[in-house]
Image 1 (cartoon, one colour):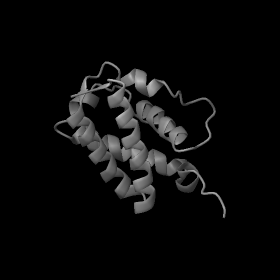
Image 2 (cartoon, one colour):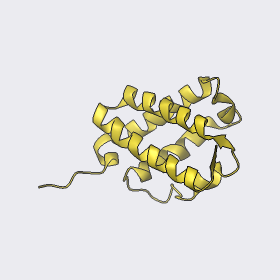
Image 3 (tube, rainbow, N blue to C red):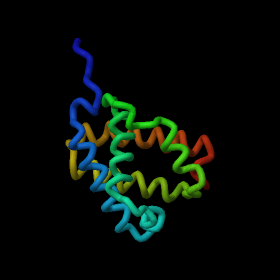
Image 4 (cartoon, one colour):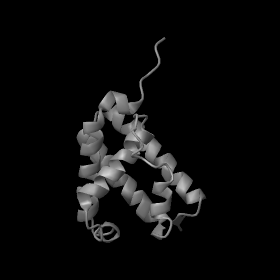
Length: 127
């Protein structure tokens, strides 16, 4: 039996970029989460960093653009309540469903949920 390719290889970098752009469009428009992201001055650059993180997390090869610890550093002092993490995940799921097939979307969402659970265990997400 042949090994399954990483999700990054199956969907391509363009799809990762499209999901991230769609997710930020939804986040900024959301009345509960928009304030957490409205301070971002250089949105295209921020989205590029987030896309690089996801590309790497999904198994894509990088040229050093993604820093694994950067995501945790960036969220350390955000004070995001757990209910807002759940909302963030719901908006990610909607973004994934709009850009990918159901299997691909479910695989990415499962990884995002695992990362979210890790952040909760590390105390980066509040009660």
